[in-house]
Amino acid sequence: MKKLFLIVIIFIGFTAVSNAQTISENAIGLRLGDSDGMGAEVSYQRALGDANRLELDLGWRNGNDYDGFKLTGLYQWVYNLDGNFNWYVGAGGGLGSFDGKKSLDGVNDTFFYAAGDIGIEYAFDIPLLLSLDFRPELGFGNDNLNNDDLDFDIAFSIRYQF
Image (cartoon, rainbow, N blue to C red; front, side, top):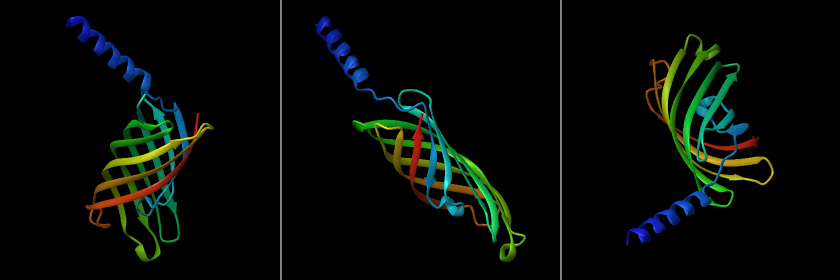
């Protein structure tokens, strides 16, 4: 009985290892969403293991009405659905700054936020990664911009894998 149990455990372990997928070491590109008014973000992903990675996103705006930036860091767990098709979930946070001009003159804010992330992605056989994700953010800052609320950010991303 002990031998059968050991053989079953070894078989399950071998199957799990042989089905484990690997993610690219690095990926860089654009995350195209509203980013809470900051627009598109430059996005970088770094693998931390076979199924874990760190994602850093930087959005900035230099416009007529306001200037600002928003930096997000997320730790993600990646799970294989089928072949090159994955889904992922993550958690993290970030910080940002806002400086109003013209009609918003004098409205300045520095804020931080907690964020979650869930999405799907497809890694092509060429070094192209496409993804669609949903990121709820709970912001904290001073009352100038009413950042003490929950925002939802949906984005499409295109990244080069290397």
